[in-house]
Image 1 (spheres, rainbow, N blue to C red):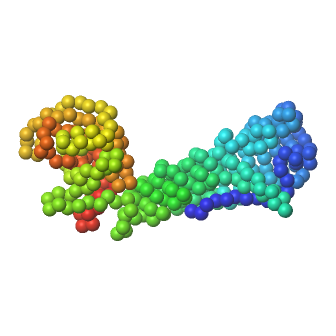
Image 2 (cartoon, helix red, strand yellow; image 1 turned 90 degrees about the horizontal axis):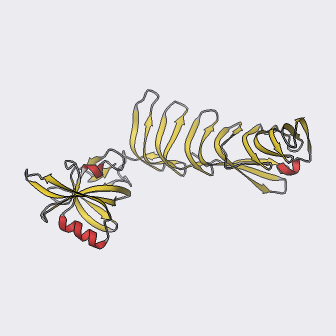
Image 3 (cartoon, helix red, strand yellow; image 1 turned 180 degrees about the vertical axis):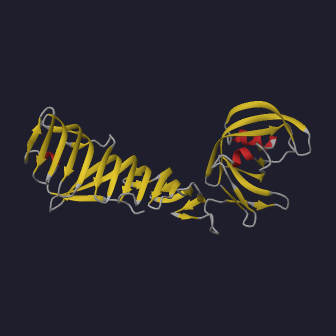
Length: 318
């Protein structure tokens, strides 16, 4: 998806052109009216104040077949109000920003979409929805609707599908659900930049977890309902300031051999796993220094709601 820069070459600014036209209907001073400009040929229909377009209105550039429907402040587009800009090749819906560059031939006008909005390319060939920066889609919850009816729902960075996303067919089927990078679905590829590397120690799959910079090697244990941290390790992390405790609740826990051991459930601010920041994580700390550090199901499900483990490649994928 290429960056859209919509430009039109006009011969003069809007405000000076108020002196090169005429009011053809209504009150073009303090009311509602219709004003026709000569250069460039254009028509404004809407509200006026102090002889200038103010409030809701519609400006049509006849020669270029471009129409802006929205709000005006002293004769200029209001960039803080949602509007519609219609062009023969696309339509903006959202917060339209206008810039003007003076050239030897005249004034070069550029319009871009900023903030939450929608761009419809060529009457439905591609419809982009989400947050835009200078007409480029960048949103972790974006939506792209294709001409064949398929929809991409997920992350987009600088106009390219990136992060977690999936294709939804018109019938509701799911395709290519997983990780995308620079517009490619990469879960099928050998090298996944978002995968978490694992190590095998002879009996368990291990992964490195960062607690505000302090690395702890933990057992990947999808059978454990909650993250479990060895008491000695947890207290050391607390002394270092690597965990910030937000809540604590007494409890008891049944371990693998069937024993029930008392302990405490702490809610900590965050832990970091690769590129994923997992916030507000509950951790059980048993009243024993012999327990293992287990990366449990409550943390595994937080990033995206699902995960997979490729044992052959020693990778954890969300």
